[in-house]
Image (cartoon, rainbow, N blue to C red; front, side, top):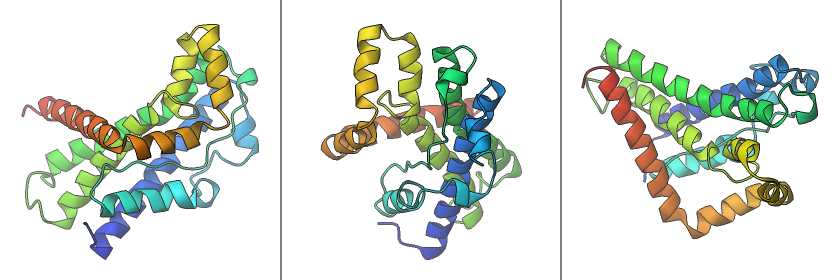
Length: 214
């Protein structure tokens, strides 16, 4: 178990920062595509009080870190009215992809800064190494978790755009209970999800190392 209070605080701050930017990206892309719902709800802001969900933004990431499990989490979903979006289903898919893409960019930027500054090349037990490493790992964890194609996760919005009407109908019915279904699947198939996320994170990090010639 990982129970270093200072490192837990660092993980918590990174998790909150990352999920805020994730949700803000959803709202901004929706606004650019014609939907002002998030703006009118006051969600186009960096104010953490507008975005943080005590359970998904704080408790889940911290507990997973302490248990040495792949870390994921989320924030309060940004309200979107897909009827206002240009491109309808495809517009919604772009809105959905904006969040995970933001996490990918955060992970990539953190890796590049950490690598070229030397923070990720020296003293693997130091706090600087830990901070940059967690910026990378947590954001990649958020990326992969949110791309799971089960409503209401972001991956389901992309699937919805390309799915036949019969599948869309099933997904719409799942929407209300989707997050509960996700939790149940994680409880039942926890080892599978952990392996999926770990392999995904490892694969992307290997790609990052190739970018810097390693």
